[in-house]
Length: 549
Ligand code: FAD
Image (tube, rainbow, N blue to C red; front, side):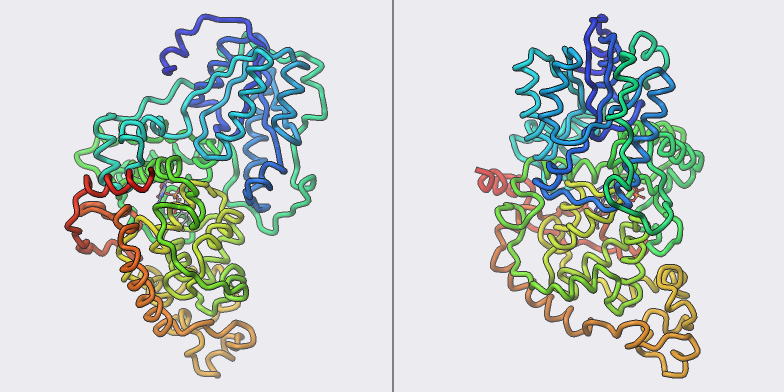
């Protein structure tokens, strides 16, 4: 059903459950709008199914839960303003629906389309229960710019696996659909929740205490649609910044996000990507010139879309085994190295400062993610990207199934990325944009009094300098856990051999000539020539299809 058809809908008198999963918003929420337009009773529900998360190994740390709870509180406040409320259910989703379809005399279930395999699995199970109970199920695409399944179908049943090829496909689709209108007082006017349910305390808001969690640090990202929209408006006021935005020119060492910092809001759907995309369009239309994908702001949203498409179509996308686009690399297993990386104890201040920012705040700049991901995998420690992905999934506020796995495969040289000979230096990378080490001082206070000359390499400081800084390397801060020059060279050789052995797989995701990634410039706007591969995209598609069969 199109958004236009939603607004044409004739009012039916349904009792509807609107199931919030992501899509935690009133703007551009066509399935919520449909519920409001066709029902006299609407029960907005969020199901907290911790066993489901455990079964599908979905990790979520305290900072992320705090963000989600804030999103739910924001939603609840907004719903209450219109006489409804959010019902936060605990336990198994299927059991909840089986019980409540009857208990609330439900005739319709509405929800967003989600593309992750676990959502599809659960949605199919709930749909079956609905069908058995005679409940109509209505859903709309709103978490992505396009209907992901249609892109795959149009591309002959496979996902375009290079950005260039993806752009070619999108050309035929045209601009993404417009955002649907925001749910307002008018839409809520003829909907209510029976008083008894409205007062039922069993569905009250979840708290961190209930989850047995505690956040150690104050939040820099308050969750919720209200805050997300406020942030968007603030960014859009700066039209020069918006039109000239080029991702590789943004600084990973900035203490405030030098990019939009909107990712947590997009991940949980407090913000609609279509809303943002079309607001950007309006600003671009007024400007003499503007940056273009892949480095522009719209280009960033397309990266997100690109990974959603790849994840929806690729079996075992979040693991190496059985993943047809992923190089099969014999990574080392080293729990102690992994622990030191996670806990910001590598002995490389730039890497540790980023991991400390991740632990405390749950958001780090894209190029900083590059640095720590490369360090963990192909650069220094040769530990599997799956381990890094798990840590990010738990600690990032914006943790996203498709985007996280896609970027980890990219950065580890396992898929998509082919400038694998370029290993980020854990000393020089950060220095470029922050020679004084302000970022390190902020996130690693133990090093804050080191002179700039040694802040990236404190182990090189003479003892009297270390004493004056109040930090003795080896006692107060660790020595580097590896010799970067040596291990990066060894790893590079290893990677060369593996890629040669598995050339067929790397062809699958080979980047084409004009596919410069938003992600591939180290630390600043340095322009580089990309290698050109002799194969053309059509050949690559053929390989993908064969592999998929
Ligand atoms: P902006 O540059 O302002 O971009 C706007 C939006 O575009 C972002 O909010 C995001 O939704 C999207 N976007 C930007 N860059 C990318 C990208 N490379 N791939 C896909 N979408 C992108 N992003 C997540 O949202 N969730 C994750 O779990 C995640 N894991 C990552 C893991 C690794 C190893 C790396 C290298 C990157 C990861 N990213 C992830 C992508 C990217 O780093 C973040 O989206 C971005 O830094 C968020 O900051 P921003 O909102 O200021 O981005």
